[in-house]
Length: 177
Image 1: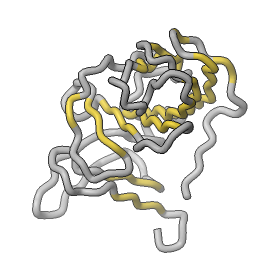
Image 2: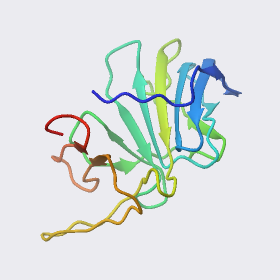
Image 3: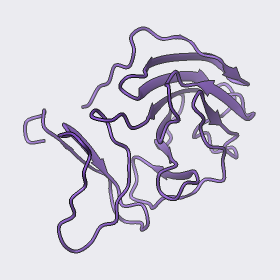
Image 4: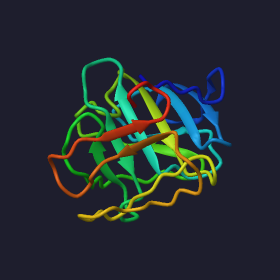
């Protein structure tokens, strides 16, 4: 398991149309954890970071649903995928994050990010020079070198343009990682 602690104890987060909004953020690391209760209405939650997130992940805590993943790094628009499936990413047709908030749009009744009365956790990440890098690259049939500006201890890779490819995770900490 991988466990993250953002900025300590959670505090009330601003936003609209969502209740029980809490955030624990570490702006220096480019990472925050938010919890909220859905409303089935477009809403927002303050993420507590000092830059626009490039990757955000939602999990419904009330019922069994996939880990819903959004990113704006593939082509500049917001694209979605699922952390626990091998499907490709697609255009989300939703609002992007800003330097202060995540948009938590009505999810068409899917319950992935905003069903009325259901509880959620969301994680937001943005690149921080020398610490964390969120990005994309074009693969090939030969070795590809991706420069991050530091030696990563944890790497997550997902092919985004074709189904049938799982997420791959590497780390330097766990035995066999």
